[in-house]
Image (cartoon, rainbow, N blue to C red):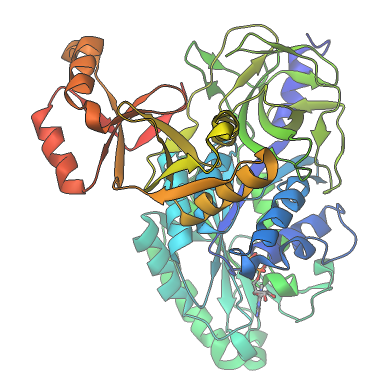
Length: 536
Ligand code: GDP
C-alpha cells in the first residue's frame, strides 16, 4: 500500500486529464496531436508524430500493418505536462477495420476531443466514434479544423453537428472569414479577436490580440468577412444555448472551437479548454462496488493488449488504466481473474513518446505492463481485493470465417495462437457446439488478414480461412425471472446447430440472415439477445 495520504493522492488525481482525439481519417488528428505536444514541451521537433503514419494509406499491405503495430506501441499513449496538469492523450486507430480496438480505448478516457474537417463536416468514422462516447456520456470538445481553406459556412457546420450528433453545440470561438480571407477567430468568452497569420512553426503567443467583439476598426481592416461574422455572432447571442457545465459533463453539450491545426492556430484555446473544462478521473464501476480514484489502494483495468514487434518473443504489452490509488514500480499486484501475482518491474510509461520506465502513476494514467499472456483484455489488477471492473465492450462480429489448419499436426498450435490472438482482442474466436471447426468473428475484413498473417509468422501455422454462412451473431442470456439458466439451456439444446461459445464461454447464437434472427427472437420471448457484451 502506498505511503501517500488520501489528500495527497486526491491532489494528483485532480490534476489528471485523460482524453482521446477522435476524427475521421485526414481531418487533422495527427497534426493537432503534434501541436498539442509542442505546447507542453513534450517534443521539440515538429514532425515526430507524423513519422509514424507516413504509410497509413497502404493499410492493406502486410508490412505496413506490422510496422504500425510496433510503432504505435510507443505513440498510442502520450503523457505531457501542461499548466499544472498531467495530460494523458490516447491515440485511437483511424482505420475502421480496427474500430473494435478504438471502442475499447474510449472506455479508458474521461473526455474526447472531436476534430472535424470544416470542408467535409461530420464524416462516417466520426459518427461511429461519437456514438460510443455518447453511450458512455463522455464529455466532448469540438475542434473545427482547416479554416484556412474554402470550407462550409460555420452556421451550417454548427447545424450539421447538432443534427447529426444530437448534441447542443456552444461556440466558444467564431471564425472571421475562411480560406484566403480567413482573418482569425473571435473569442466569444474573452471578448477579443485573435488575428490569423499563417505559418506552421509559429508560436501562438505571438498572435495579435484585439480587444472587443465589435471594435470599430474591424470593419475597415477585415471587410465583408467581419460584417458577416458580426451578424452571425449577433444571431448566436440570441439563439445559441448558454454553456452549461452539467450538460457538457453529461455529453449533451459540446463547446466548439475553430482553427487551423497545420498553422497552429486556435490550438492553445482547445488545450486550455481541456484543462479548464474536462473532468479529472472519477469513480469507476466494478461488479462489487464503486471505486473512488483517491482510494489509497491501487486498482486498474486492462483495456488494450498489443503484441510487440518481435515475433520470436511473443511478448505483449497490456495497457492498464489506473482507477485508484498510487502505483509504484515493483509493487505486488494481483490479477483478480486468475489469482496470479504480478510484480511488474519494467512497467512502461509514455512520457513524451519515449518509452521509459515509470516510477509512479495515479488514477487516469496509463501504464504498460509487458507480459507473456498473464494479462487479458478486461482484467482487473488490485493489491488483493477481489474487484472486477465492468464496461469493456465486445461487439457482436459482423463477419465470420471458419478456420482450419493446413497441417493437422499443428492443430494444437492453431488453437494456442487463436486463444492468444483472441485474448488480445485481434479477433473473436467461437467454438460451435456442432462440428469441430473454429469460427472467427470480426467487425472488419482486415482483421482476418491480420490473424492469418500472425498465425503464420508468430505461431508457425498456415491457416486456411474459409467462408462461413453465418452473418449475424448475438450473445444470449436469460434473466432469473424469465427462467434463468434452465431456460437458457433449453434454448441452447434446441438451437445446437447454430450455437457457439466465445472465448469466455458465453453462448452465442449465429444466423445467416437478420430475418432469421427476428424469427428466433419472437419464438423465444424469454431469451435476451445482445449485440454487445461487456466484460464479465
Ligand atoms: P489525420 O488523418 O486525422 O491524422 O490527419 P492529418 O493530421 O494527417 O492531416 C491530414 C492532412 O490535412 C495533412 O495533409 C495535413 O497537412 C492537412 N491539414 C491538417 N490541418 C490542416 C489545416 O488546418 N489546414 C489545412 N489546409 N490542411 C491541414
